[in-house]
Image (cartoon, rainbow, N blue to C red; front, side):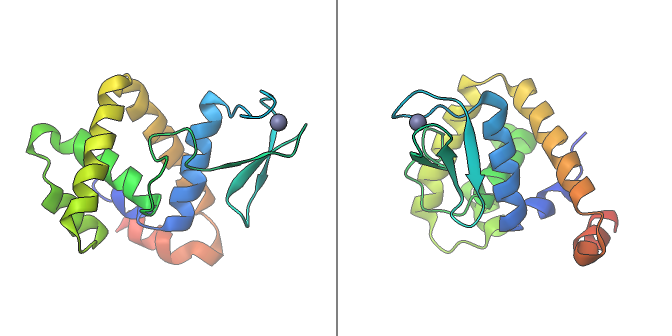
Length: 154
Ligand SMILES: [Zn+2]
């Protein structure tokens, strides 16, 4: 179901951010200050802003990525590799696909993602993952992003 080149889509940080935002919006964003679930998305700041009290919520806040300083793309790369490889997944795989030098932050990161995948229904995540990927693929069908599209079909 998952194509090997899907992972390449998420190595683009802009796409990963858009996809993570979509993933979050499926569950909804709740304002920590007033409890409202209506938000604007501030593209340049990569934050949600409450429509009622203007309180801002970062993309990572309240998610498995809370406190992470690693790129959002690492989330999808890790989810992809863990779902695909299962117990055969290694931090070296993650290092290879992210190009990240340091083992330690990736180890902690992968541990969090594994917990996240164990706590959530994996098929659901997989379906979301593929659906969101398809949406991102559709958004790639524009001349400005032709290069990525060509990579996907090669
Ligand atoms: Zn609010």
